[in-house]
Image 1 (cartoon, helix red, strand yellow):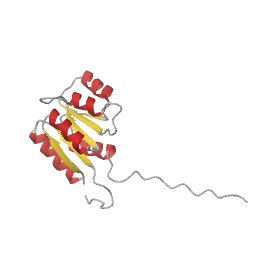
Image 2: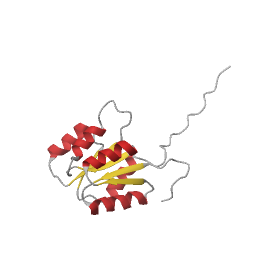
Image 3: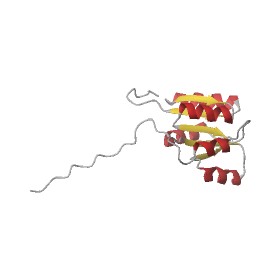
Image 4: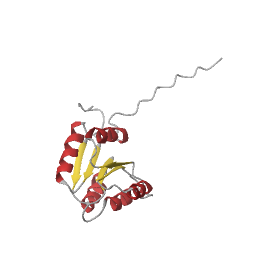
Length: 144
């Protein structure tokens, strides 16, 4: 997909301790024209996010060092001057975990295995590369 050189490149951070999943998501999202950065645990993910300030974070729920929940909580904390959109991915089946993620402010919650098309559609919806088009309002004519 060609990238419009007139638009700033959008950055997506992918955080997952499974290197195969990390590689697959990175390749798929990059192929759609995004800049992708990665981290393989929650601590590294939080550090990279705070340094790079991505527009979107795709994060696994269960990881070593810091869970996706703790990273989500930190990145969605109120009073920050920057808050990324967030997609949580997990193999966990529990509805309680989904409810907790939603309470923390996750934008989308996907259960593994998910289709890459579904993930890419979600990325595009939460972090569009092109500005949302709005029809210009017709100029109001002044009556004399």
